[in-house]
Amino acid sequence: NAGVTQTPKFQVLKTGQSMTLQCAQDMNHNSMYWYRQDPGMGLRLIYYSASEGTTDKGEVPNGYNVSRLNKREFSLRLESAAPSQTSVYFCASSARLAGLNNEQFFGPGTRLTVL
Amino acid sequence: QKEVEQDPGPLSVPEGAIVSLNCTYSNSAFQYFMWYRQYSRKGPELLMYTYSSGNKEDGRFTAQVDKSSKYISLFIRDSQPSDSATYLCAMKSPAAGNKLTFGGGTRVLVKP
Image (cartoon, rainbow over all chains, first blue to last red; front, side):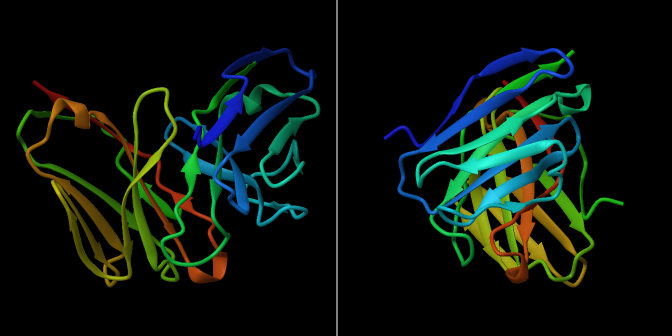
């Protein structure tokens, strides 16, 4: 049982390049999330998917797109990377979107640098 | 102004001391309060989960919520070097589903 896995672990891009961050969970969770973490800012929600087939914007969606490929996988795409997108990206999943004791489980993160 | 404020630290304490962490928030709709622990180069993991006001204890950890003051705390008793990590508070309101609002995190260092 691997939990939430993310690839790649590290990535360096040049301004204007595109890339896709991959996330997969094996806990049969319905809901999945993408966050970015910047120094002193905590985690900020980029996009989330309440269930397979649905996606919604979070707090900081500009410059990103997402795809909920199936129940297990949720990818984050940067179409034209900018230095402001240098950050650590975390994927998370939970059994469902709402309700008590609905813990979000986080992956190990992808460290992205945009030059 | 951020919705959730947290002192970034670092907070350095000797082994065995009590670690005291806190967050203040501005949104009175928050009803669920969480503390996450994040080791260096790892993802956050849930430590404590509290609903509404009051105290909750789990081993060496105690979480307190004071909704009237919009203030939450986490206490770690008999701190160990393995408690060295960044501690993030997070909160959510029923209307926002499971969308969490995080504080910036406090880095804690427990020295042997």
